[in-house]
Amino acid sequence: MTEAAAVNAPAPKQTNSSTAQAEMMSWDSRSRRVALLYVPLGCFLLILLFPFYWMTVTAFKPNAELYDFAQHNPFWISSPTLDHIRLLLFNTAYPKWLMTTMLVSVCSTVLSLFASTLAAYAIQRLRFKGSGYVGLAIYLAYLVPPSILFIPLATMVFQLGLFDTPFALILTYPTFLIPFCTWLLIGYFKSIPFELEECALIDGATRLQILWQITLPLAIPGLISAGIFSFTLSWNEFIYALAFIQSSENKTVPVAILTELVTGDVYQWGALMAGSLLGSLPVAIFYSFFVDYYVSSLTGAVKE
Image 1 (cartoon, helix red, strand yellow):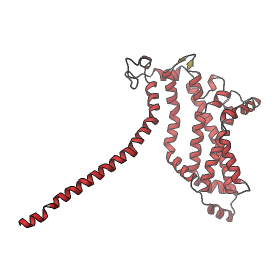
Image 2 (cartoon, rainbow, N blue to C red; image 1 turned 120 degrees about the horizontal axis):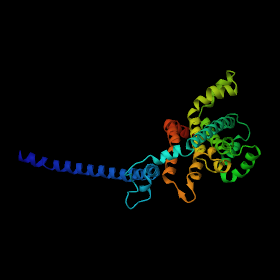
Image 3 (cartoon, rainbow, N blue to C red; image 1 turned 90 degrees about the horizontal axis):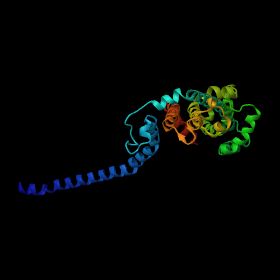
Image 4 (cartoon, rainbow, N blue to C red; image 1 turned 45 degrees about the vertical axis):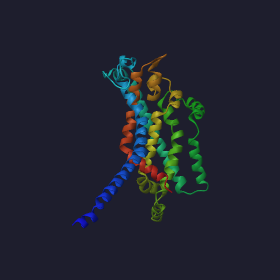
């Protein structure tokens, strides 16, 4: 019994040693995961979400807390108030600015999707000579800065009598929406098997029937992605809206909150942040409903 006990005695030590080594490796793995994944992700989320947090806090702070950092915590609200939102909704034309922005964004998005769908399908599927160069040229047109384009566009807007009307924005926004949407849809149409269209051509279908009944139903994620992109850019656009709209009631939200809520050197920070917060909600809601389609369309667009 004594010899057997002596032989078996080192076994617990080996077990404890292997267990400690396994725990150390597990600890190193968790530490590495925290350092390489969670810390960068936390920093990214902090940088990304802090402006929205600051905007929300400022929108619900009374003026006494906004300008007195010595007595009040600038990162927190002691006495929340709705005075800034009430001022924005009832003492300004903000509801009209919001409706104008919505009208311009929806109309320009629909117009851009219609034109870019036809252009992308023609470039990708009709296979005419030089189609690849045409697609590249369309995308390069998107890279031209709006600060250069708005000068000739302003001349056209004045000549057509569209100055200071929403139609000036509805007709000019597609100049920078269509190029990118066309490039995005070209990549997505490329991921759709061409054999489906060949079978439809053999059965006697026309190109428009193929586009409407076969290609577009399969390209819904790509269309949603292009629509989200167009709607977001139209909603946030500033230069054209500032140059082509003059009257207060026809202004869009990005321009109106900066030109109508700033008088001289006095900034109504509470109303400004409330206007920015309410103006960002439609885009956030739009993204929340279609985020899955948006991601799947981007992966389809880059697929060869």
